[in-house]
Image (cartoon, rainbow, N blue to C red; front, side, top):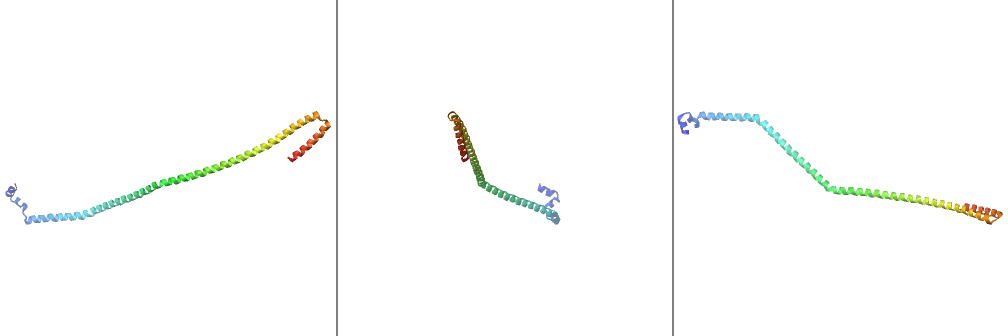
Length: 182
């Protein structure tokens, strides 16, 4: 078919010929292509370059930000791990301090209770001694009264009135001396 096309039309035979007209056409095509490339590069090169540079800067900033975030998270993780390691010792310190405070409070409460018990014991001892003295005085008074009554009946029945008067005065004198001595 190619052979047929070349023989039937003489203009078709020129398709592959490198004559001056063909070379000038190719030259103009190359000049047009170079001119279009120059114009497009002059018009689009700087905006495309600016776009690519801004994208590159944005990516670099994102990478730097990611690195900084990674470093901060590593530092936070190290701090967290150190705190976890120290939490047992902090817990022990807090519990020891609480035990010391509790023991001090317990000792203070016990000392105060012992002091209160000693005070109460001393007060009770004083009250018992006062009641003992009061009971002794009451018993002495009652013994004296009973003795006086018995002596009075004895004297009335066996002693004469003059003798009775003499013994009564002597007993009063003895009781007066005894009351002032005791």
